[in-house]
Image (tube, rainbow, N blue to C red; front, side, top):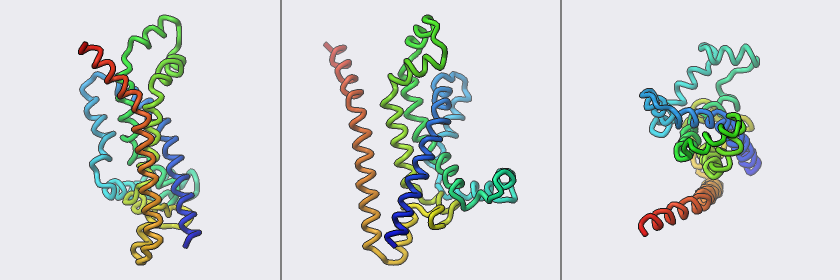
Length: 233
């Protein structure tokens, strides 16, 4: 049982790490687009991105399970390309995790990009810096803390997922069995000793992650407070 829990931990970390990388790759341009968007359709896109915050994970998992099946186009294309079924696979839980954790990465980045403003980017453009150069030399250094926060939140939220993983991944040891499902298995088997160990581990890990996020944001909050005091004086 200890070996199976260790395998679940490895699967969980692999899933969370890969999901976080994908989220940063697709979430960064999406957050930038939303931050600079001024049309009325922005509200619709923001609502779609934020939908996993209020949508029950089983609902999203149910429709993804249907989409991933060989009877529907996404599942058909995947099977034709890879020769393997998408549903109940490691790839399925990564895709589901990306969709379910998307707002936890996009929203912090969008807020950071909106607060950045355009003056520095315009100054960079006057110095003949291209868009990519401006992003890496101006945007990234000024929003580094927000990127770390977004990555940490995305990783932590992925680690804690249960409903959507169970719906589209099942409980396959070494493939889709993650820590949250292993914990559920222990509770069902009345093995409360192992359940306590996993629960305490997840609790301490979550607390450390949240403390790290708040610690990273301390300089930002201190700077805001100093600015407000300066204006008051």
